[in-house]
Amino acid sequence: QRRVRGSPLLDMLSEANSFVYNVTESVEWRGSTLLPKPYECGDACKLCCCPCCPWQEFSDGRETLRYYNSCCILPCCYNWKVAHVSAPGADPRDIGSLAGAGCCENGCAWCLCWPCICTFPNLLVSKFFTSNQGVFNEEPNNNHFSIRRDVACCDSCALACGLLCYPCLGPCNYFCKYCGGNTAVLSTLPFFPAHGNKRTDGTDEVRYGEFQFASRLMPIGCCCIKVPVRYLVHSNRALSADRTYDAALSLVPVLVRGLSTPTWICDSTCCHVCAAPPVPVPSGISCFDRGLNSVTEWMTFDKLVLKTRAEAVGPVQSTHAAPIQAAPPVQPSSYVQQPQSRPYTSAPPGQA
Image 1 (tube, one colour):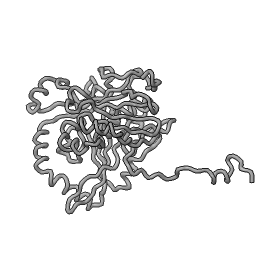
Image 2 (cartoon, one colour):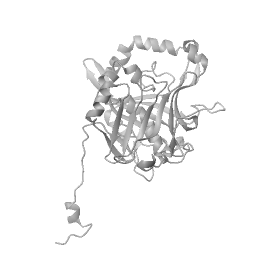
Image 3 (cartoon, helix red, strand yellow):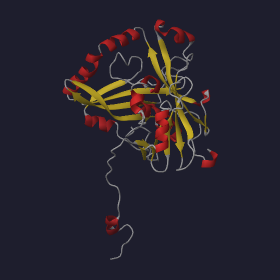
Image 4 (spheres, one colour):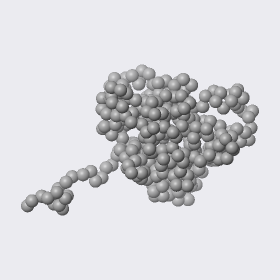
């Protein structure tokens, strides 16, 4: 029997991966699924000898994203960065970085005596640098996004009380939510333009998007703990025109989840203070999340999956870089124009 292209017979004989079960963590970026690359013997030895320089790569077989820090014990000198490898064997090219606020970026008074300051709106917490006209550097003109916090009176007291009452506010409270049928939780952390959440005239600035932290509740005795499910970048559709924005913003979900280096136990315990990303993670407890403009929603697991599913953005099947999955764009009423920079294009290996 003749096999005509497009005929039912040929369609039955063709093969495709109709079901994929990723056992390991994965990253969805621009419609591609990137898996963590295993370390070679030499790289593993280097990381064991020098755990203060962590890095990890995610690859789809063609492109690679490399997350790294040249020295995480000196956060004031070295920032977390993401590099892009356009093809196997090509040199990595930096396309984004995440930095905490400098010592005097919030003023000398905050640097020298922050406990004595009662109110501080639009406090800079973290900032993102991306490429500008195809060139990456950490100059002020490349600072396109920021995370802000509105410090109010008695925030320090609320934080201290929260730490003392955490056994009741944390695991026991999670268990009450679990018994009530809410087996999942979704917390958000908004990010804004470089100048923050306020315009020059004092009005509220429109956010560019938000980071979403989706977790499920796992009971242990009469308490519950949160187990990560999906960490997402939920951004404005206009930002998808430049792929470096997605990659730079992906530093938050990837670093909050943690890099699976050979010394990850040390990085997660002894060196957690040094290796932790400069980003506040919403806990779902109000006294800890004061001023972050974050929102925590308790829900069923099915609803969580629907709210955090990956969807196409624009003409390209594009999802934002985040472990496991990504989220749809914000509603059109919150759309803003993308920062002024030309879309990133990968240079040939010899010109990176």
